[in-house]
Image 1 (cartoon, rainbow, N blue to C red):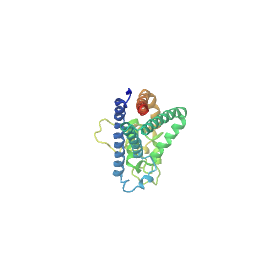
Image 2: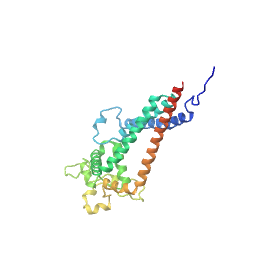
Image 3: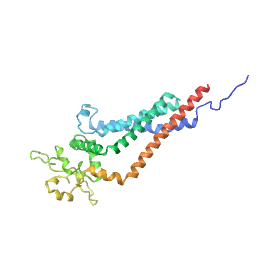
Image 4: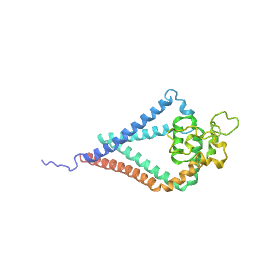
Length: 268
C-alpha cells in the first residue's frame, strides 16, 4: 500500500498568525474606542438619561467614536477568530467589509473632487448647525473650539456666524453676558499669556468690524480649510495611501489564508 503526502497538509502558520496579529491591534483599539465613548457619555450623564441623545441639535463627537469603535471591534473580532479557527465565512466577511470600506472611501474622494461646491456648502451648513448647538454639549463645544484654535478661524464664513447661537447673538433682548461676543477660541493667541482667558471674546463684535482684527481671527473656518488643503496636499495624500495599503494588506492576508484553507480541505 502506498501513502501519499501532500505538500500543503496544513494551513500556513505564517499567514495565519500574521492575520491574527494584524487584527488583534484593531480588536483592542475598537474595544478602547467603545470604552472611551461610553465613558464620555457617563461623564455627561447620558447613560442615566438616554433621552439626552435625541435632544442635541448639533453633532455629538461621541457618536463618531462609538461608530468607529464598533466597526473596528467587529472587524478585528472577525479577523482574529477567523484566522485562529480557520473559519472561511468570517475571513470572507472581514475581507468583504474592508473592500467595501475601501470602495466607499475612494468613491467619497472622487465625488468630493467632482462636486466641490456642494461639499463646501454641506460643510458650511454642518458647521453652522454646530455653531448653533455650541453650548448644548461639552464634547461638541471642545470640538468647535479645537477647530477654531488649530485653523486660526472664527465661525463658518465669518465671526458674525455666531449670531446663530442664542448666547452670542447681538439682538437687544439677549440677556446673556456673551452677547455680541465670540468663544475664546476665536481670540488671537498671545504666547506671553500663561493663563487661558475664556472671556477674551466678550463684546468683541460691538466694536467696528475694522477693529476686530486686533482681537479675534476674522477668517471663517471654511475658507481656512480651503487654504489648508493645498498646503498640506502631500500629507493628506500620504495618509490616504498608508490607510489604503493597510486595508489592501488585510484583504491580501485574508484572501491568501482562505485559499490556503480551501486547498487543505480539498486535499483531505
